[in-house]
Image (cartoon, rainbow, N blue to C red; front, side):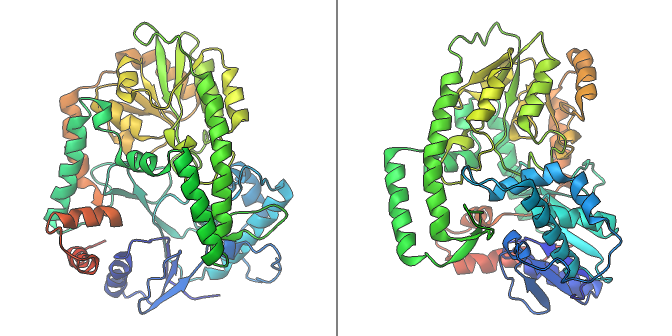
Length: 495
């Protein structure tokens, strides 16, 4: 058992260690445990590479840790078994599915390991995003049971903006806890970036596609050239990185979940062909007889999976089939226009087998559902729809900017805006259908709300965005000098 006051989960950006060291000094905190994949290499920080692989060595002795905690482990697992299984799918591939018994034992081992790092002095646990790995989600559940203070840094869909809360579900308001960043230049930079996106949202979608999607498409669109490059990459990793263990994936006939660069690349290469097959099946389902100008339809924008935005943030509807079915069954007078997230059919990631041919075959049976190509104009669908639906995506914010009502199934920062409605369950959705005609979005009011949000929200830059920001000063600054410059800009962080 390690004595500690604070545990920090997965803060990979290089400036975080300095921020927390300053925080520790001010609060006179004795010990901090840093859990993640990047060792901060700073004084007074205990670093633990506490990933799923480290925590879940299946051959461990469950009786090894004798520490007694007033928690019914079996009850904790059974109560959260379904959502844990969905999180577990991150570590399965389309060709590997573990049994219920295996998973139950795995979760017990995670609990065993997590309990071993907690101490009576543990006061606060920081999560750098919604806990969306098996071990971090279990740590979150245990912390709630033990009344340990939790602080989650929720990344919004707006570059650089982060909301702080003590729970996965939260409401944002102007009184929400935040980190004050004294540097006004950084705040102005991000406000300008979001304002530019908001202005462009009034025009063509092709000129305002989210940058993450453009980059992912550019790098990972499946083609013969892309497959050839992947073969070369596989060959290189076979020669030079065969023994470098770094990724967490289960393989056939193995209870060991950590894999090498080469093994992961092999799975990604196989995934290209399964994804391509699924994509062809999906494209064949897409309707050629849509009448977007006359049809009364709800636009359902599907989310990429597995991802934190759907699991665990959409707690009751992380299974998107279940969500679509509920909406369709209660909206018989309308069509459901279903558009899949383009990233589901791109390379570069393992095929986890969540949205496979079986998944789309089930959706196909929903009579009032129509499939749309992944490249269909999002803004046109927003404008022509009755309202927009997403489990929890950027499309909700885009709809708001275009003056269209939307619903989502996660309780988060977007509920701050009047034009985005949080739906909790089926009964809540039925009540919404009775009154949505009376809900109007006023663009001037939305602008005021957005200004208020940007002023009161925390700013935490991501590394790639920090470098973009520094390019404003000089295109010639070396990476090392850039790091020093951004370090000085962020040295005034206060919690």
